[in-house]
Image (cartoon, rainbow, N blue to C red; front, side, top):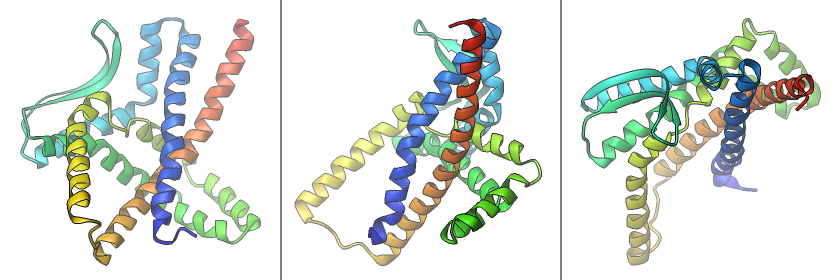
Length: 249
């Protein structure tokens, strides 16, 4: 039905619910930590430990991209910090030198690129999710068999936790978006002006194939991430319900 647009439809169909569920998980995981320990600072530290692998990958991705682009890095920090009067929480940071908007945008997007690569590697090389997609086309029986085999993969829950941790730190932070936003605005204005003045350009098949491949890879990573998040969201929701019943509120 969608033809060449299928990868882009799949990308949008996974990204939007992923954004929602990750915000839900962040909020309720902190609530669950606070209910368990009762102290906001200790609860923040517990939350930090739970997502530590993702935080490390996030900040190292910034650092590595900056180094590859020849940008000076003055400090890399890992650890929960409350900033400013709003007490906004930062789980890690990388301070880079002054740089042009294009390189700043690439540095800001680095965690998403790194996390996508890690998630796809775990999904395809360890969990065999590509075979799960083939089983999906074979009907419910084959799918059930493949899911059963998937759960029996050695250290399955550890790998699923790594996907969960990495994915919940993959999206650009507020500071990352401040670097990316000017480039996106410029590209949007430039693209609109080009279309207005020159009409819709002919796009080569090679460019279309590359765009479809990128969208397909991102959709696969986001879909796997969404599946892992649903599992952990159910666990978090159950934990909150149990603690509410025990605590009486």
